[in-house]
Length: 188
Image (cartoon, rainbow, N blue to C red):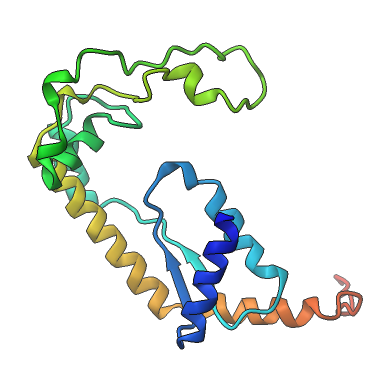
């Protein structure tokens, strides 16, 4: 259903005259699915190109963030995510409750040499990963500014990009006649 919905959104954006669709992921759970969705765009000829934003953090701000951080790991409701919430919606943060449960990984499937749908719950049955108690609004504001700067660079790069749409059109054209191949060049 989500794939169909996002496909309909992309097609609507295209019908309104846009040739590029940039998707900015707002949730880590989509990290594998969004590139897959992007690849499915090659199933048929499109009048638009889909991009998935992959911003790099601002190096200068990353140094400042590193100096302020009290932890060097996390994943969900950790120091960094909690800091972001302190910066934008401090009324939703209950920092006094941060130490009531552990956000350390339990590693209950560490010996399993395969993926299991229980990977997250096996490590984080409390549904958070990290130690949020060191979070501050200052840290959150720096992190948000770093993300904004990174996204700005992505937007600028996608806006300027002429290569991906050209290659996509070439791919689509060549896919229409898959048995017609170019003559093999020999090294000589």
